Length: 230
Length: 219
Image (cartoon, rainbow over all chains, first blue to last red; front, side, top):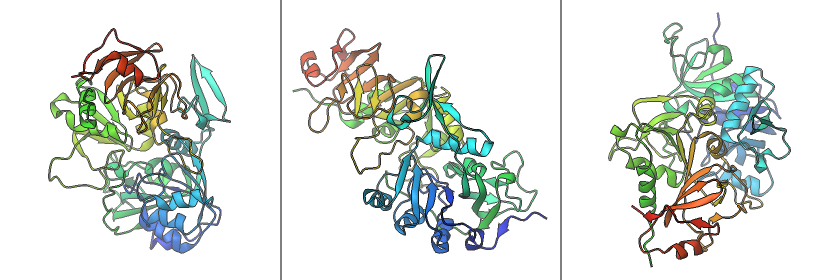
């Protein structure tokens, strides 16, 4: 019998090694797996490379992980905004490396990583400093930049509901990076608010098929606070 | 002295120029201020990079849903016919040429339509690009909303951008507090100006050479 549910976030993250690459879903607070990140803070793994669109806010989730000094490098598109002080402080003091990736390139690098592709050519960033040092090519008169796939040892993702096979549905704009990150990780760990019985999820409406998910934890997440930060 | 357009008036002027039925992305900053100026009957389908097609402004007193935010992480709602999708699909909509318009903020725009809007090039500061570079290569019309000059009074519409580029030769129009400008084949055509402003006064606040054949009063 396949049952991907773990009893707790700590159990689901027990084998995250120092130096691991961890993909973290979310756009601002929507879809950010705060409780999994809190468990990773407790678990203690360090020297992590984290891939996330933003850098966490206030002193929860990813911001807390950064403040604790566990993140060696952040790969992100927009680690800026009010309440994102943890990353900004670490960066200005030289305690964290940062790779800035255009948001669509970040999503597509993850998708390519999960889809077994060796990279792709994108017009995004052509002729800008974010293309510096990268291979470029002109096809039919249009310039493209070669971008490599991006994979993670783990993905930490938040979804609305899962069955024991790890089939997922998300809620509204909290879906964001969840599906490509589940695909791109060796071990995708998903926190969900609801557990559904196998066979009760509409197969036409499953967004992430369970094949991309290794572990699920049911967490009664605290209501997401409205993020007033721009 | 002429009266400058307020930020709201700039947003409203841009909103008026978008045809009904268009697919439009609104970036963070001033662009998201455009949203309230469209009526639902216009069926302008607004895209948000975080996986929403068909967003509208919240009505007064309408409850806030933390998982229903725009690109600036401010609360919005979904219209009938709206949909959600993941980030890889959201950016396929941009790069794939499926959006009719995108509206971005700007630091500088050059005469040939280069846009600089993501980095001030300051040492020790982590520049954040977000989705801007994907939008400028993909949307069919790139419109920019920005003040005509910097706080120090320096021109933002320049012969050549001094700041790091977001994209080359991509901007079609700029809406400022003083004028609306079209970027056509390396020329900057003034489409309208605020009342009381002379061509000479506008040129004096603009580094790039302007042409005035199309110019009318700003609505």
